[in-house]
Image 1: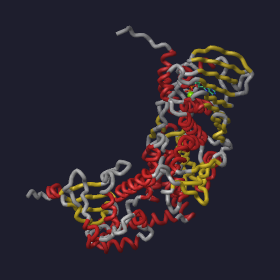
Image 2: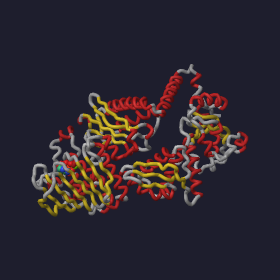
Image 3: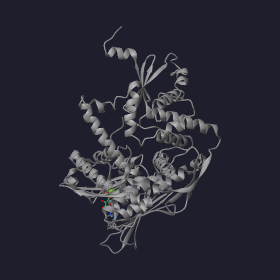
Image 4: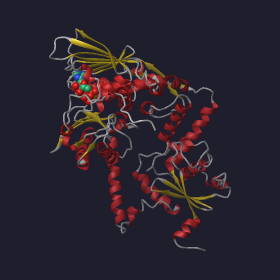
Amino acid sequence: MAEIKKLSEQIANQISAGEVVERPASVVKELIENSLDANATKIEIVIENGGKDLIKVNDNGQGIKSDQIELAFSRYATSKIEKVNDLYSLRSLGFRGEALASIAAVANVIAKSCHEEENEGVKLVLEGGKVVDKEIIGYNKGLEITIKKLFFNTPARYKYLKKTSTEAAHISRIITAAALARPDVKFTLDHNGNRTITTPGNKNLKDVIYSIYGDSIFDKLISVEFKDNFIEVSGYLVDPDILRSSRQHQYYFVNGRPVYNKFLRLAVEEAYKELFGIKKYPLLFLNINLNPILVDVNVHPTKREVKFSRGKDIKKTIKNNIKDILMKNNQKTNNPKFNKQNHRNNYNQNKTKAESNSANKKILKREVEYLPSRLELTGNIIKEDIKEDNNELIKTESTDKNSSNEENYKDEIHKINKEDENLEIRNILGQLHKLFIIVETNQGVLLVDQHNAHERILYDNLKEKINKKAKNNSRMLLTPIQLNLNAQEKEILSEIKSELNKFGFEIDEFGPSQYAITSVPDFIKDKNPEESINDLINHLLETTKIAKNNELVDELLKYNSCRKAVKEGKYLSESEMRKIIKDLFSTSNPYYCPHYRPIVINFSIDELKQKVERYD
Ligand code: ADP
Ligand code: MG
């Protein structure tokens, strides 16, 4: 082993840069946080080639004194804390004194500054962390930092960077979050000469949301404002009818800092789920102000996860208040979705009571759907409850006109597993909890998840249709569907647009953040194409990891089949169950849905006998 030596400051900085500066967006995040800590009211960001060629952040904050500017670029140099106790009353975004040193270690930097108490400015030039020039300049109050050649001396890092549009999307998200956290600050972002974000800086959160999301969600915003002894919450939620399939558009701010926190997330999501029963995610913009003593200082430089002491209390307060707000809002707007769900909730509550009271057999019957003889009876009861559910889906997907013909069905008892030729379906026994189809086989019993099964069938059908055609047919829409995209989504759309075109989508840009979908692939035959296509595009934009070509197509097919498949909670008639089981076992993989969730649970008769200790 060689002798032990202290690392040079430069190498130490490069190592710490690995932690702080992961990609251009992390540079932007650090620089913006510094500007905010310096009380800037205007922050202008300019990037080129997704930040890989240039990042410039200009602010009108208090600036750095000319005799301190070198110090700002050395490690552990900060003006924000002096002693350990300061950490517990932290109001600034930064405090580690590492960012500027780390960034400078892996790039070329030009800093121009004029401190509020000084009359002239200073310019400092650094290359790979070393000062190469310093001069006095005339300059406005504030600081401007220009980063060029990021990762020039750490090629492994540089290689790891993604496509321009991906890096730009990350930067847009960072700026969007910062702008939403601070409506009092005006933000602009220019990418390759195009202004992609501009917020008014007029202290009005709703205006910031408008400047980023446009019309698309503006009418759907629900204002939130409440406080109790130790917490104060304000911001906006959205109507349950525009929920998204990912958490991409959820912004939580704790004392002005964009954060992630499990309790906050659960509080909101449980509130929505309990009221509307939907497992999707609301867009939200929530400011949570609380005594910093309750927030555990997060010492990891890049992670935004924070911890609360009294997390459970905080969650309870937020959840209850949000439920109240959503409930009041729905009474006001008389949202049909809510009423329907409320109706279901009442029904479910009745059910629970009934289950605990075995004497109440009448209601309990609704749950007992497993015997063919009872099927019709319970089916009728349930049909009256659930008139809004129509089973058209399965019928329209049906290609076999005789599918409900019992004789026909019995003739074609299916070999359900190619490897196990001996397994045969004997009978469909019924539906369990409106979730499973119960199938008797010669070897035992199968529980088939109705949604997963139908998803697999639709997916295979679509795939077959698409594989047959060289190019997808496209269908022109009578009324184009309008899409309002924010900067981040625009970057992603630019990445997947040509692929979408091949697939049958025509998407035209007709305003700074507005797009119109004029044609869609002809397999999209929804009654309400506007909602489903908006949803689909949003889903694709949120699945930023999609690689080109095949994966995108596959994602489209999966999404479309999942959306159209029968859901849990849907009553199925006997013939519909038969159709699903018959079709399922002719698919490419009856055991897993396209999202790799299992479809079938298999109990052998031996297994069941063992349970009742029958060993004959
Ligand atoms: P930290 O933010 O953790 O203190 P940084 O390395 O990011 O560490 O910044 C070092 C110091 O440089 C800050 O503490 C602050 O005094 C000064 N500084 C950085 N950016 C700005 C800015 N935009 N305006 C004024 N001062 C700044
Ligand atoms: Mg900092």
